[in-house]
Length: 313
Picture (cartoon, rainbow, N blue to C red):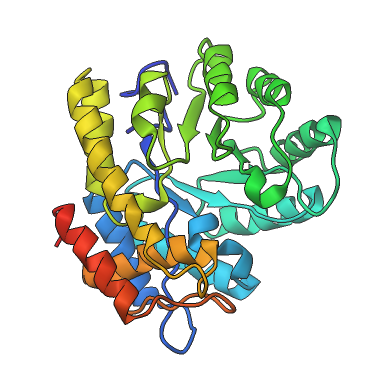
């Protein structure tokens, strides 16, 4: 969807999935498969693409690979939807450098986490976002994902950054529903400010509370389902919203099929998305970035059963 106070005119709203990064069997970035993913997502009705996010395996990609992914997606997208690129680095100077590279390669906006590895306090976190905004001067989204950064974006910091126009929105993957709701309430008066949930199975509740959209990893598999849910919410058809969310929650069980004694939690989720995309004929291989394990034949068969139950196969 396409800054004002309604979903129809807001710059960032709707479904903006974090695009997966397909690899070939030899470990190289599979650009042909990546192009098909872009078409699959746009055909599914997404309103933007989040490039180089967690679902894109960004911490595993070399700089050369990150640039290839960004260039490939930008070329295939060809201006059809906004591209939000993750500038994921430990500290401010590195984020600015990464962000500038992504903007040169076609990104329209940047998504930035709190600093990680560095031990920052609230004041430093605020100064981090202000410095990045000053350096790049494009729409900037704060990505609240403490499971990966070990630092929660403080609510008061997020509100001040929003009120001062430093950030255009927040992608919340913190799992803190109380703070999420408080952020929605505190920023509701800010024209064009967008708050997204990053949790695939509670989007209905987030939308009912006023969220402007969702950034779902599972959206790689079923973008049209998330689009239907967002459209139903905009129409006030909350029974339809719940039905679609219930179906997507069942589809999300693909992430629980891998053997936890063999596959890490991160590889299980991303591997399930990739395996589903292989089964749907969109990508060629479910290979993961080293050292993550790829899903095997029995896990693939279990995912196929779930896809059939969800009406996708």
